[in-house]
Length: 248
Image (cartoon, rainbow, N blue to C red; front, side, top):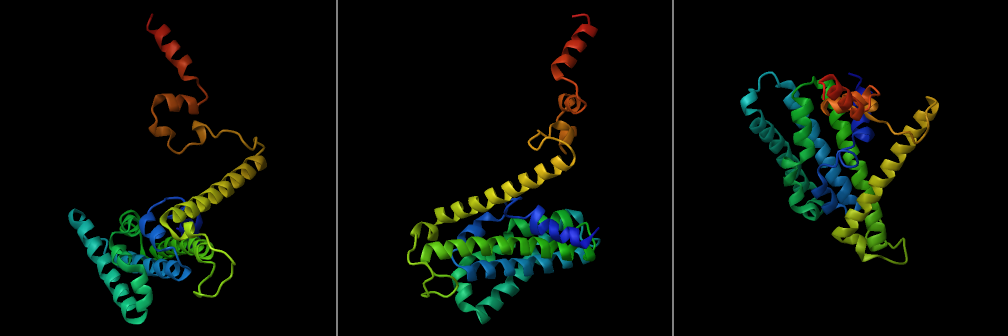
């Protein structure tokens, strides 16, 4: 597997927040300041990277029946390491993020990646995967934090140093976090739609052409109607032909 492609996959194409939309609880809770967003993102990246490496190395020795408890123990060990480091070296940051650092152990992003990827792939593949997913998570957190801090307090990174002459308290509150996150998701969808339209135009197809079942990865799971539609057949016509064949 191409390491660069794996890395970019987590960074953009399958970004855990903007695309997969997992791990949102801690993401919206800690993003009131840029420092918090960066700290949370890098902490999660460290735990994800080390957990994926360890689980990949020992994947053939972990019995399938107890794999989930083993995964949790590994993740909990590295979560405890980063929690103690932050408390010892960056106590203010640790206090600001509160319970959300210990809760990394049950973060859906980490559990999902170690189960679906690290437990099946070599170390050479899991390192770019962990870095891509972790840094993809981090840059979104940092972007949300920057907007919320700037609009919510009028300052950025350095408290008390005013950049804007006003502040909107809405952005410092939980609804403001949802609003900014929705803004990021909307931009991501717009960019994705634009790139898809460009690809269709290069292929000589109308920009807003519906993809249909033929281009859908899940067409094979939708039953005979979807399969017929993918082949260009009308489901109603197929049913009519079946009825005529049965003498109805």
